Image (tube, rainbow, N blue to C red; front, side, top):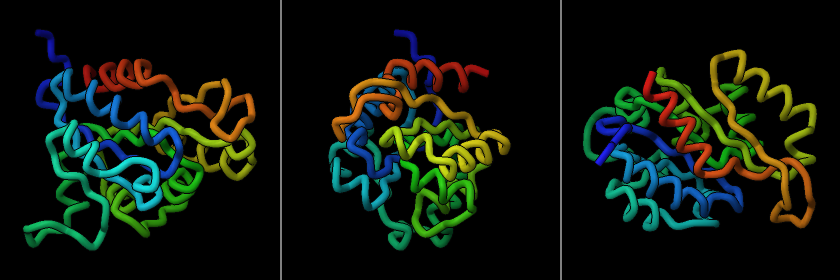
Length: 184
C-alpha cells in the first residue's frame, strides 16, 4: 500500500465553521495516507464537532485548551509546533485568519501558529460577504506575503443559504495539496 505521507506529522487546526464536520473526513484520509494527525480545535469548533470524533479517527489526543498543557514541563504549543511538518487549518474562519495576520495568540491554535516554522496551509470557509470584506482580504494578503498558502474557498451554496464564494475547498483537493506540499 502506498503511504505518501508516512512519518509526516500534520497539525490540523479546526475552527468554528459549519464546515468543521469535514475535518473528520480530512483526518481519516490523511491517516490512511500514513500521516500522524494531531487536531487542535478552537472552542467554537467544538460547537460543531466533538474532539472525540477527531481523536478516534486520528488515534491521537486532541488539543482544545491552551491551559491544558499536558504532562511535560515544556508548553504544549511549543513542543507540538517544533515537531510539525505541516500546519493545516481547515476550515479557517475569518476570525482565525485575523488572529494569525495580527499576531494575536488568545488560544492554543493561534499560539501554535506563532511558533510554527513548518509550512502553513489554510483552507478558508465562511460566508461570501465575510470572505470578500476588505479586512479579510487584507488579512489573507498579509498571510500570503508571509508565506502562508491559501487553498480556496470554492463557490457554491453556503450553509447560510447564500450562493457564492465561501465553501471549504473539497477534501480531495486539500488532501492533494497537502501531499504535494509534503512531497517537496
